Length: 362
Ligand code: SAM
Image (cartoon, rainbow, N blue to C red; front, side, top):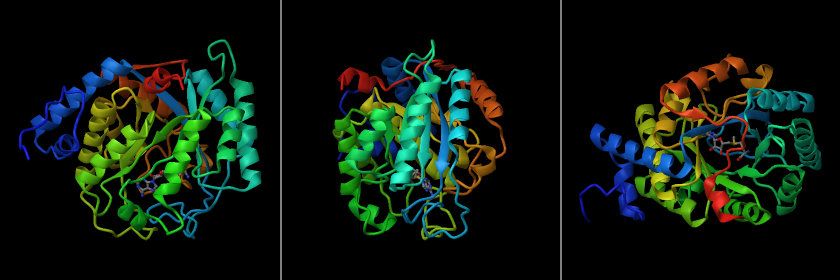
């Protein structure tokens, strides 16, 4: 095996190349990776950062993922669901602010009541936000977990056109250590394929720095994104939550997890080139400048938190969630300043779809 660092300008990275990139520790190698990823981003996606206002619709969840603070068995969580009018307020706020899109995320639920409520909300958002600037209304990304193909179709027909469902890890043994036996990677993959078939822009991602996760696992994750023709990536560092079974599991330091998460963003940009990549809240939770760093390592999407203040702290996946006290306008002003400070622009009043998806004419 060669010990030289891979050529960062090549078109086809091997698994060994990706492992070497993820293993970079010296400042000069990390800077070389960052700068190469930034060039690939600018060439394939341009300079713009797109905002999606994020509303955490409900923390009620049927799942018991061993890492997640809103898991069903966590008795310390006060459960909530945002009412329709409050979701519409967020949608209107996004339009007024020039955001082209929003994200609705929620704990996983499959009752007919939940599904029809989300469907109704999607339709209302479309009705309320269709205007001169946004002739097709706000772009809507949905992230409400594993559902049946029929449910995904209902959501799609009601107006959602992007869907995020993280695979969390593609290593089946590691997946089994993170989830109860009834959850499987096969089901997630089937969901991702069904979403693609229906016509969604499909997003997935992984947690980075999980206990026992290797660089080889992460390289396999990136190759999985490529193989599955994924359009959007959302990934961030694993953050242990004491209220969960994995709260005490040994993992690397926060600083190491941030470094690895940034290298993962850069490596994904180098390999996939034209997909949208989000700079996630979990990065900011571990490093106050984590989200800007994510942008400079190849991400082009930000998801400012718009969840109503009265429930924001009840959607606690992990400790240290940022922006709990800030109101949406303050969050926006802060992000705008930070984005300009790193020489990037905000893409106002457009959906900001993944160029990868548009090229595929899917
Ligand atoms: N129910 C939807 C789903 O499963 O896709 C959306 C909500 S789920 C809570 C959103 C994401 O939070 C998960 O995909 C997971 O990667 C992330 N997450 C949960 N707990 C985490 C933790 N302790 N550290 C980092 N990320 C975490």
